[in-house]
Length: 355
Image 1: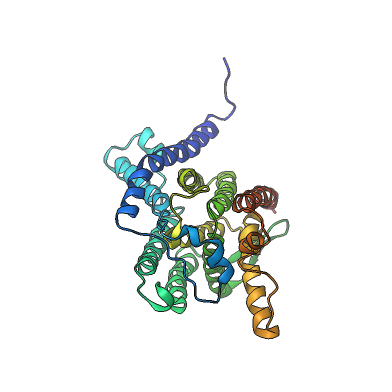
Image 2 (image 1 turned 30 degrees about the horizontal axis):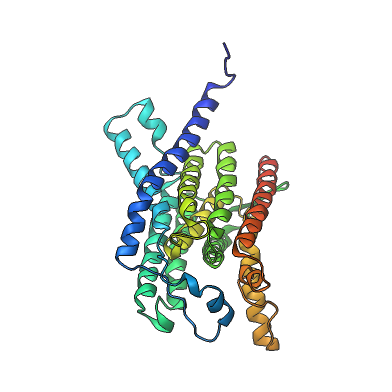
């Protein structure tokens, strides 16, 4: 008979893997119904041909009409299970219901709240986009979108700084540094930049989902190693939801993630990075998000200052498409890059924890 040296470790691993599996199964079961609703209400993507993005419009014209809003299945399933198991644990407390519950005030309340809040803002933007309401063919103005997500980030920063008394940043291999009130703008920068980077990456079938899957996978392991089991469970649950989403989102996609998925998952990823005090590791774990955003910044700067383009089209995944790479090849190579960068970031995060 085999005896485990640490039974509690086995229990916690089971909790993390179990919630990820449950989320995948429930999301997988619910997705066909969501897809039908999106098609019935014609929640289809608009491919705008404004003259500013002729290559993008040409490459993706065939995707017009494919529903957006598929990200609902990820955050909706995670939020549903978090609430359900919390209620069950409150009404029928037992070791079993406790093991299933991953909603806790110190670990997961803020990221779950930010997930839902950002998702609702994104859903409104998706709706306006689909219905053609708003400037430039539909959707919220960029300054309004930025303001709304800054508000979400500001609330999170206030919560961390005043309620959780966090004001340090961890440098892997060196240690913690007290930065005082500078923690607030740093927090906001991490959250907003991560959210918009994910949004920019959500441009090819399966691309953003694959990148996020490896990123949340790395944070599942990192949070677990820190003993933050409920946070690890949340990351695993999001990963399970993403897996179910990807089943239907790989080429040719049945639906797209939309702002309701991309912005909410990006916001949550940033908050989890701050909760694990690994903001400096996040650019390594989610390196593809960095190069996507950098390509846009470089392109905009070059066009403004030198009136010339560095890339054929941005974000950079569209540049590779314009070079003639098949969409599936771009996506798979980004997945490989994500797997490598997430693994490297995880190792750096784990080795640097005790410093």
